[in-house]
Length: 396
Image (cartoon, rainbow, N blue to C red; front, side, top):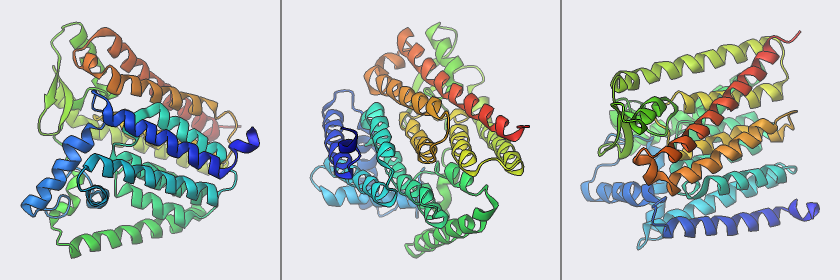
């Protein structure tokens, strides 16, 4: 049985069937877990064709402009059914990335099965968000990394970062070893310069970089860690409430000090990233094992972007798949808390969204407890990772 599960064809076939099932469940659910595709991506495409303005190029957008590529491809694949086109694209990209991982890194079967398990645990949002495509590109980067091709890994992580910014966390971890820095810098710089030049050739103006500041004025999303005091205050009717922001198209909290806290979260995130960078740098000075440092720092940087973020979208849990895969690929000792914690957190996330999300919006007790437990697991993983890094930094 073990030999059968290690066949690449077995994993690819099972992954294909499972993703099709997830896609059908998501597309037919009355909870609308594919809502972003239907209510955001499709209207964006329609608006661009109707108005002649291109988001991220000559019109402000929350994403870097290369994210237009999958949005437009979905329209080309299935002009009569945008959701079908998107799901076909998402599954095809995932299958291609998984095939590349299995082809490039021969011992990758266990990594592929974990990716599939986490995808199942996360549910339809693993397929219905741009984050899923960025995770697929990062999966290719993991294949290059485990094959000791640092430049290739940095290139694909940079491409993924131009879809959604989060892969810069893993890119930062690659930059730590001294022997990697020039290769990582060159790959990231050349790739970014080419993409910027292409953007300007397409007619870009200052809006090419609008994704950097586009979310500055948004509020605190209810699923984020920082939102929990106000969510619990809403449960207890203590002067806070959940509302829908029609501009950002998301549910946020409103109450005492929410606006000030929202404006401060960027600084908290920068401080967390600086702390992690300093700690990992000290680990490097103490000659910590390269593999341990890469996996732990990738996890820590990624959690910085999640825990100190005023946005807490469910698909963000998928980001943690990549650091876990790095640790699995390097066969790190005692890596099970990361594996188990991420799987449990993603599974709880699917229960919350979309299954009990309506009840959460009403600030009912049990959904809020579930959200609190999910966020607590993320914090526990973060504490565990930082503890491991301290162990590397101050080992005798």
